Length: 412
Ligand code: KG4
Ligand code: ZN
Image (cartoon, rainbow, N blue to C red; front, side, top):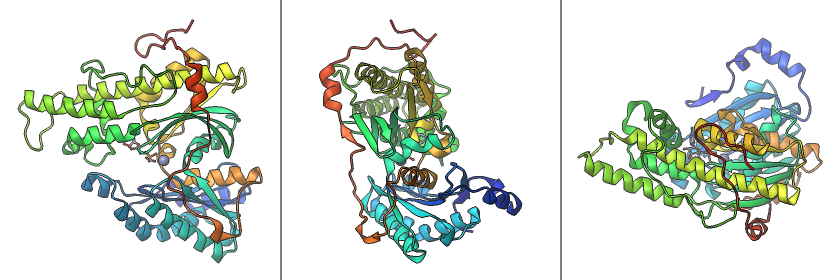
């Protein structure tokens, strides 16, 4: 057993259940490999969206110890774990390499050193069993995951993707056709939350010691007052769908320093007002995300991009694990007539399942897979789709903001 590798469902350990699941397997059967950042993910998914195995080796603890992700360290850890993770994924699924229809692998965007490890291993497996290789766009995969369990989420739909490295609003029109409405001009929300958690030294609280920064902020925020500290509203003068989290990050760091002084907190101590600060920061992040998403909804309406009567918002990426943020987004959806979908937390953070599923989706529309394995390469930066953010800005839509606290306000 490889340390840190966790099968998704204990049920999959049962040979009996596994055999029953496998007899009903629907083609195509795809192995997904994810190594774009700090999680080594390998999973097998079938054409019905059934997860036959899900193995994630997280590097979180190592990166927490280093105060952030150091690419060569991430690469080495991926290289150490990828072989065992892929083997384990096949074993848990009860299938052999030869029984697969394809190997899907994240090739963009992400850390080059990390992406290369996944691509090389995927090539190796594809070559061994003469399988096609499906190159996958990480952010598009995040957007499609929800369709595994909720096939009613038909194209087109609006998606908000929020993670440690990305923040964007897009319309998904097909598995590999997206319109980009807006993205972050600087940091991603997860990055702002991670840096704030580090500055607040939340790791020194036993209940937060092993948690991702964003999760630690959420935990503390649950017992804090979201209006205790004032945060600026980013980009309020820009009527577009772009985001900015650098200002919120700096404000959190500045407030942490002044609170430390005010309360004489030294060395490894945590300020007594940390819960209030976390709650206020989390609220500010949620408010900014909600405002830009509301404008994106209005833009889709104005341009007729989504079908009347079936307007849907899909939220995914690691920050979508945050219950407060998704509750606020659900309020906006409710007020504007959008159904809001969020995958379970396990599938919001990086994993191999979403990559395998993206492979299934591409195969279904006849767009997946090449046998020319050496033609596939990585791309550290890669837009999710056609950029229409200038059109959004040119429309200069003024919105009447949905209230995020108290009873849900109906827009006029
Ligand atoms: O999607 P992800 O696993 O990796 C990429 O960045 O692609 O997202 C990781 C981010 C981290 O910044 C982490 O702090 C954040 O997701 N995160 C959360 C929560 N759980 C993880 N942020 C807010 N609330 C959470 N519960
Ligand atoms: Zn991600």
